[in-house]
Length: 158
Figure (cartoon, rainbow, N blue to C red):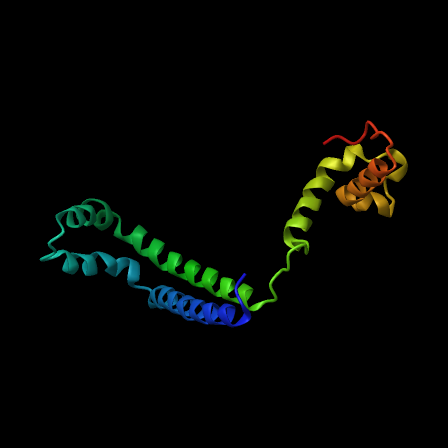
């Protein structure tokens, strides 16, 4: 795990890079002419290029589909910028300590368990608050039964 100072330095670098990617993509998006002008810009760049494989790739793949690649480039730059800014925001939050639950994973797993466990909850528990907790309640009940060396009921299957 990185120290607080290292996390802040990495977050600052990531913020700068994310901002640059986001602004580059937004400039292309709001100019409105980037996808249409990509073919002309690439045509000028091909002249005198010593890399034959690259010139062939641009002429046969990119130039015939330049409008598609123009839109792809601008939206990819915006997406990368947003992801980098989000990652920097996560770096600035408090790090999770070992042994702490990962809340997002816990919530998602609970939602998945609730949808799978609905038929396995005993009828007398349906509608009660205990049934709402789905897998957590089942896991706790299972742990308690294991501690008391009781057999698992037929309604719980792993």
